[in-house]
Length: 69
Image 1 (cartoon, rainbow, N blue to C red):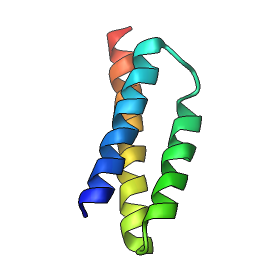
Image 2 (cartoon, one colour):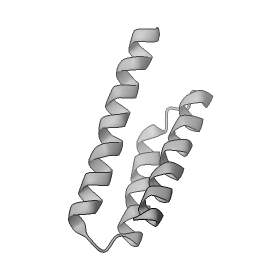
Image 3 (cartoon, helix red, strand yellow):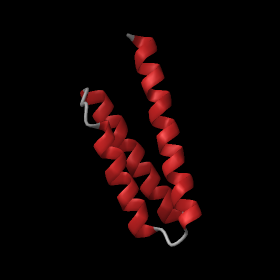
Image 4 (tube, rainbow, N blue to C red):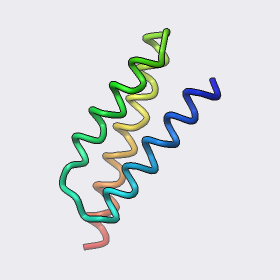
């Protein structure tokens, strides 16, 4: 579980860094993060939950970004 949380933290930090830089490549970050979880996860349910969490985080960040404009 610790390894999955560490991977999740790394993915979120990468996403935050890209958002701060104003990069439009956030979709690629999710693909990279998803594939990283895929190689480290032996449980498909956990994989889908992690990806779902990151997807919701992305949607929420889009709403925050729109609000701040």
